[in-house]
Image (spheres, rainbow, N blue to C red):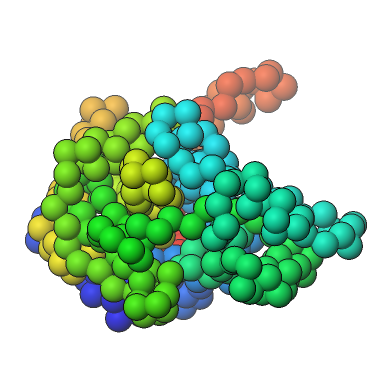
Length: 358
């Protein structure tokens, strides 16, 4: 959409000002065939990933065999499932008490009774949502006035779509007082800016497509510390460092800061209101590549070079290649039956998604 295009445009401009050639492409753009010319791929606005989830996962599982990739695919895959990361992060920060209802494709049983869930959670207004999703899709506020909706949506997502469901208490602070949902943005491990989101009057979903709104926010020291705790915990759990992350938090019904979700793959970084942060992210990408280029030059005595699609088209046959070139083959010819070590190599030949390539 226009918002994502504007946001990515600011990052592209910042990269170009650093002397990097960068472009924005889609994972489903079959006409773009110049992936071989990219040193680094940054995942950006993959909002529609759940429309082609298996293709998206296959991309994540293979992209790092071809290119440097941010955020690391291990982190992005971890962040796809709220059950996994909320359960693990609950050891480091406060998260909402959550009931997980697992779907069973072989059973045709009704979902657990609303009264049973509210008794366990000690609240009457509950939120139900699928474990895999974004943009407010599938999120419903349930209470005694709309129990038919509860049965309808639980059956739809669990039986027809094969999704597990999360159930949590509704956080009244999103509508009654305060900044609603607080969004703290981090780049390269540092808090750079923040904002907040609130639903439309009478609503409960904060997303723009549902009438939600937001603005800039100067985060408190407690809110910045909370976001950094989440960031550092994620690094410790997954074992890789994010280039960028958004931490969404709220003041819960007891008045405590509580983690709602993290975004480390399809993250709107709100560069539109904070264009200086796009420059911070571009510098982090540039410095990462400069370090890798220095390492390569120390080992090989020259800067890394990439074979582009234009070069391939000039060959007599349009083939692709990777690996360490053979020198003279003398050893193999002299000792044809001897087992010998094959020189190993790591290659950087990228692939695609809605990404920034430089």
